Image 1 (cartoon, rainbow, N blue to C red):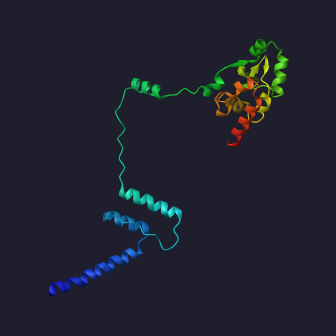
Image 2 (cartoon, rainbow, N blue to C red; image 1 turned 45 degrees about the vertical axis):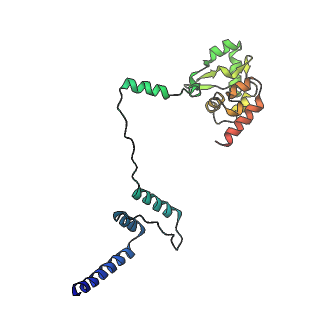
Image 3 (cartoon, one colour; image 1 turned 60 degrees about the horizontal axis):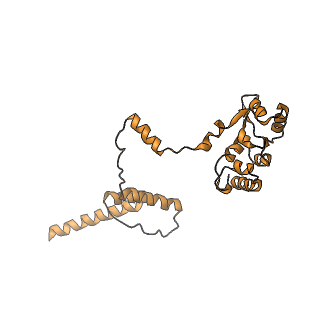
Length: 208
């Protein structure tokens, strides 16, 4: 009986010391202690206001303490040849990304194809009636798809004026667009659907 009575004050003192120490700990320290003791506890709602960032940090700490995520590893190592073959199988060609390399002609070729004078082409360029992509300091390249019936597509200058540069305008014009029935807007412009293309361009710029 005497030995039992002598153990109680020691236990009570130890319990009080632990409680006092816990009272001085912050939330992070309490969570670490709970994790070390492997306690599965629900965090009670705080009596005072708790910020969203504190709730997020608490949730992340709880997830890290309770769960260990495991992956399947890096997978088998393959040869260079097989790696290229596998990459080719999942690669999708994006033709619109090659817009700057396709259907372009220099001034001399455009003049010959359209049977116009060089002065006419230069006047179109200065008046922003055609898209001229600069090549070097003094030369220009002209996308051929912008011409219809030996002249710039009707309304092209209005569409180009909506964009910050001829390059941005042409990139948009040759990319398939759901607002132009899934076709590149330049094709609709060549078909005389100016208002459709204008609406599509203005809609695209509203979300830019």
